[in-house]
Image 1 (cartoon, rainbow, N blue to C red):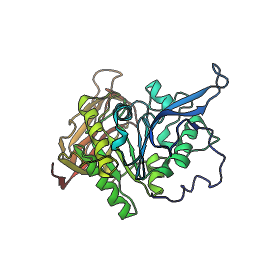
Image 2 (image 1 turned 90 degrees about the vertical axis):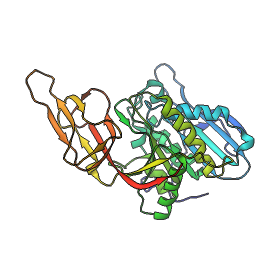
Image 3 (image 1 turned 180 degrees about the vertical axis):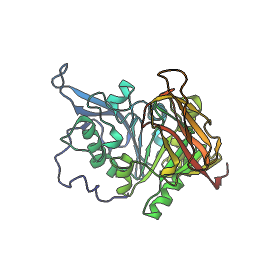
Amino acid sequence: MQSGPLPSAAPALMAPSAIVPSVDFNRDGVQHGFLRMPYSRDDSAWGSVMIPIAVIKNGDGPTALLTGANHGDEYEGPIALFDLARTVDPAEVTGRIIIVPAMNYPAFLAGTRTSPIDRGNLNRSFPGRPDGSPTAKIADYFTRYLLPLADVVLDFHSGGRTLDFVPFAAAHILPDKTQEERCFAAVEAFSAPYSNRMLEIDAVGMYDTTAEMMGKVFVTTELGGGGTARAETVAIARRGTRNLLKHFGILPGAPEKIATRWIDMPSDACFTFAESDGMVETCKDLGEPVTAGEIIARIHPTARTGLSPLEYKAAMSGILVARHFPGLVKAGDCLCVIGVLDAKAAAP
């Protein structure tokens, strides 16, 4: 099992977490339980948030930590992981699978990106604090209690209610090239239609960053969006989860490979942001080729007729990887994301 120091933002000496698991992470068999987080509120003085968790363990072997609903309006992960927790045969497992289908459970129940309790964005709250807000407490528990148990971490994402993506699995460009190579090999094993070498525009406070700083193999996804899940993207999530577990020898057999197209996101030029409010017209569909200087989106003013739209041109050539989903945008919203297709492609 890999280990390493906690991120420098998390002091080594901290109070114990108030979150209490009802499962025994070292016991063989299948357990379905909760991470109980005390939450005193007007309607329940000694209330708790009950975050579902499953642990499937069989002997010694690697540990996979599988998570969904880091953002509460993204559904492929929760669907695939609730299903896996119900159906996986413990006799086929070598090692341990820890499944948290809805990390930010309050946000998941509300169908929102951030928590309705404290407006916390869990994926910008790491490493968290045991004495912080509810979202910070969840982040702290993962940082100090769950991530140290894991050899590989799979965190499902999609575009939520405001973005739509071509379906891809991804790992990050990392300073440690040996770790990076292991992460990209895991992405290839996941076998989504697209595989992404990702550069984040805002990596501070991310679950990803915290896991990677501990030396973990970390795989994430973007599997669609629009605040819903499609049959296609759920199938990708289900197959990819089992593929990853097979890749690490936690489940038997070889990964079920499909052809994947590798995408690089080399710089900030990949991203286009709205500079005004209005109605968006995306001029390319997802997966279509884009040429540098080509118009990729227009924002139409809506306050009156007769006004010309503001045109946005691609800063680089590639394919359209993501687009803003609702028809109305505000200044600062991400309009489009462009990725560069790599010559590397995995055979089916």
